[in-house]
Length: 263
Ligand SMILES: [Zn+2]
Picture 1 (cartoon, protein in one colour):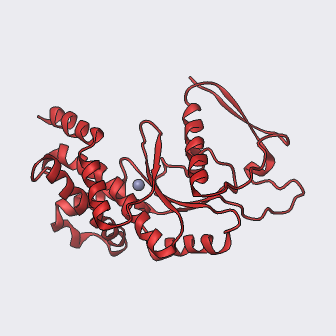
Picture 2: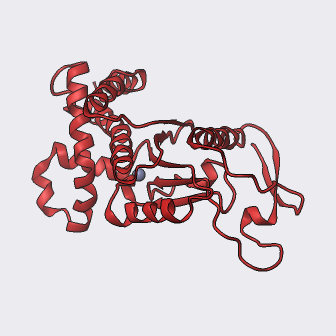
Picture 3: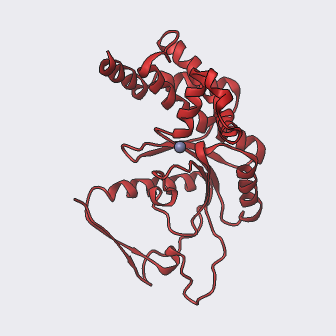
């Protein structure tokens, strides 16, 4: 058993200065994720300042000072501030199923870029393994006959994920032979490849609209680990990324172990 004690302490976590640039902002997020994973490993007393939990010492309100804006999934297992181990007022968080870039979400990010420029250094699109919205899009792709019975609001989410599913399916077919997505193993590999490509495509489209530094990544529900990268800047680079993900060890492992389990 590990134990974590949060102790509000006026002398706790200092209010950090914003990072100098997007690269430093990414490093701060990754460092936070490393310290989040440490919470599972040993007993810790985490000293946090009143400001870190949203309490202004003089009883007033603090101005917004986020150093990163995150577009993440609404999934209850992906608490953004916690998994980057960030205090109150460090992240501008937009959450929607499938971390899709609908108008309201992109508008929220545009607001942050326009109004919080003093501290904001990077936008991150964060997908996660086992994403229910991506699973719905994959199942709609594999069984299009179910599409008409899907409600219009849900379709608006699925429609935004389908390009990533198509990209992932093509890449998997190229890497592992045609019609890979048939059967449970192929479906699982298609889901996880689509999760990553959905984050990359969404990040690239946000970058093209907002002209602001953007990173993308995937939160692994099992290891709690996040990796971040810049999204591909052109269609060829996007295809290369899809090929790389489809041929990667984690996807091969899914294909091998799930096939073995079901055969
Ligand atoms: Zn999700």
